[in-house]
Image (cartoon, rainbow, N blue to C red):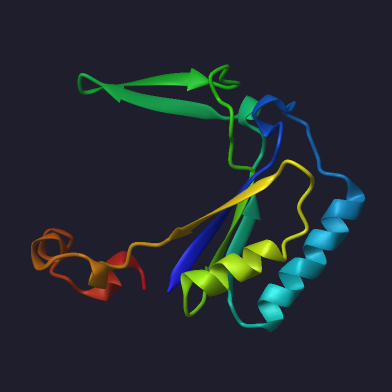
Length: 136
């Protein structure tokens, strides 16, 4: 089972475009990432620049509208992620509990939808139901 662990740092919605995390946090995060790798569960990971340097594309009436960040209505913003492959949601939760986060930060855990989870008609609509069609 694949799970995405989404990092939601406290205050990231209002972080300046040039924000960087403290060096001690980067060092602890590097050790944590190494433990995920050594356990054989890490598929990929990345940190994301703050929302203030991003953009949103909204769709309404068949037309896309682009807005540059920051976005005043944003309260919780993804700051990075890990994609892991584990045997259960409980195992994903246990890995998230070990992450070196700061007070007020949060990790949201979401299972990745696999082609095999979909009904036959959706698999057919997505290319004949072959797992390769989804990049696995």
